[in-house]
Image (cartoon, rainbow, N blue to C red; front, side):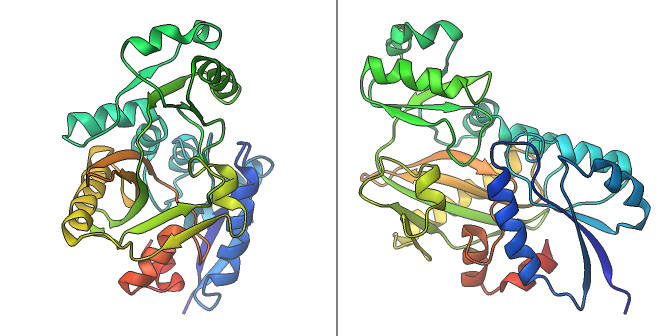
Length: 303
């Protein structure tokens, strides 16, 4: 049987380059070499090679995170080259990457989100106007950065100004939203028309972390992940319903993973949706897929 020629796209030019490269190494170890012929391309240096090889590539697997990889840019480039790829297209990728637009769509489609305001440059030094509609504690985040880069929690006006200044170092647009206290859970979705919600995972950062930040996500042992999450059946069903609704509202395809907060009162709030979740065997989506009954190799085949 002829092997399927797969172009693995990893690395890239975003601040999440190292996360992408680490994921690619795990992917290369796990993929079925009897079925797939794998070549790796780094969009930061190999776009010419990718263009040259386009006619011989059967499918691309995008393992890029952040700007130029998760925001629709590389998806558009692959469309121009005529190379099919896993996951969401240009529009869905761009909508999910923009936290402001995603929250607008969540709310329009009846999903609960924390109140938020978009910052302006003058808020770096005088952010008091934001307190007209919001109250401490507040979360400050760049709208197009992933892995919680540039994100902070502010408990007073000084921390708010500092957080906005830091966030602007990562993006030209910054969001300030109401902090939601509770348990962080994440729900994966597989499919296009017939969607499958995966079992919930609860993410518990170590006591030293205020939230699931970059260090908590990627430092070994910094966080605990429980799959399936220990929540009431009604909560699990509602979370899965919201994950499916988010997938549809953002016009995603293939797979996604939506992060949420579960308050002590049992209310759910949508945080964001990832269109290219981590793809090592121990990443969150593969963990949930395994609990559902798909091992890592089977998950790759499905995508």
